[in-house]
Length: 489
Image (cartoon, rainbow, N blue to C red; front, side, top):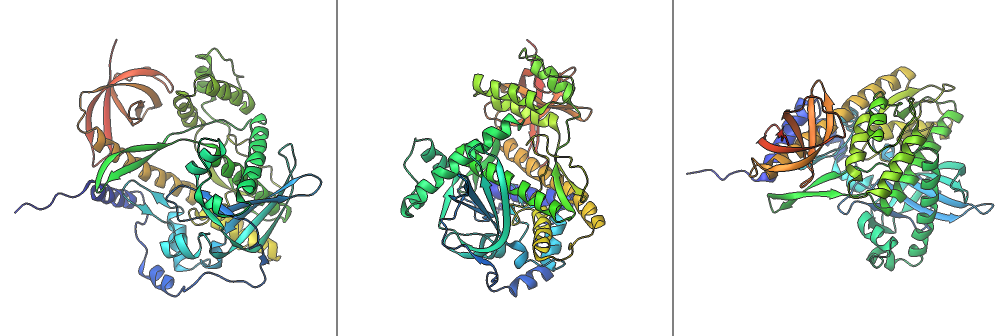
């Protein structure tokens, strides 16, 4: 009797687990971590934390997100400013340094989001419940309170521990549609008196902060992130999530909160783990790319000049801007985590146009944020740093490597999903853009559907950003291979 064929979801899950192990990531929690988890029977409490439960806190995240790391709210500020408050889940209150749960988080350093399954950095009992800032739940948090001037400048900031309650769990797409006037207010907004005006104030402040950042050289970049869509256990397509106004609101507040955290640690003479993006090594290719649009960039890396070029292209051709954006993202290179000693000059983040920057706002999903949270809590309590400079330097290297490994896993499983979708279209022809060119190979992304694969024939002389025609040669679902050949006109 024939065995039942595995579902496509199950096939992708098996691939994801295999690739996790190949990349040095742990797909499952140890017995000791699970035993430790069983002893945690409720959320953390602390009578010394400030009471901020009365504020109209709300979360905005993906529709299906349950690992909620942050809440936001606004309040009248001083001297005509607006106070923007960001509450960050106090993960360290339950996940203690050196514990079995901490060791698992330290090993993987990040949650891994694949088409087959999500591999959380922390067990779901914590990340989607006891350490998540879930709707209508009382939780401990680290609050970053910022005074924002009408110009978008953060004039001052204060950081403290507090108790908060999420009044409304909101989703990016529905909030964005309401903010831009194409849909009514989401039901959770309408259900909480005053939340609608509260969110509109936040949106106005975020747009002002965004405009100021981009004036300083923060780059307008838009990437298409595929999400697998299943009909039961069968893969039916890939959905691409575009940027929108609600995502920008959260992004701008998180950037400001991360910068405020980095500045406080520096003021306290604490070492920190900074998130940096150095000046791009492939700037010359970015200059060449801009020249194809008859724009002359300077010979040396210039974020403001690049941003002026990008924003102009976004206005001129919004439909094709993600292709240009992807090319620039590839040429900028990867961010990394590095030790920052007190008093040292900051490397900064080229893409965000900020000098003082760390990761602190997603501790349920990223281990560097847990590290920063522990440093921050020690600094606020007047205690010694919980990590030595040598430990932070090694953790920075490890977190950068594991982030890269996780990205490879997510990308490979995404490619396996794409190979499944394209497996019935061998020989089909597509328009494409070159997304990668190196001694390791040349990669292209086709337009419909927006899927990336390797160019195995006809790649000579091509570079990132060039547009060509390709034909699908073959697919390999198990290895996530999609091979194209160049069509000659």
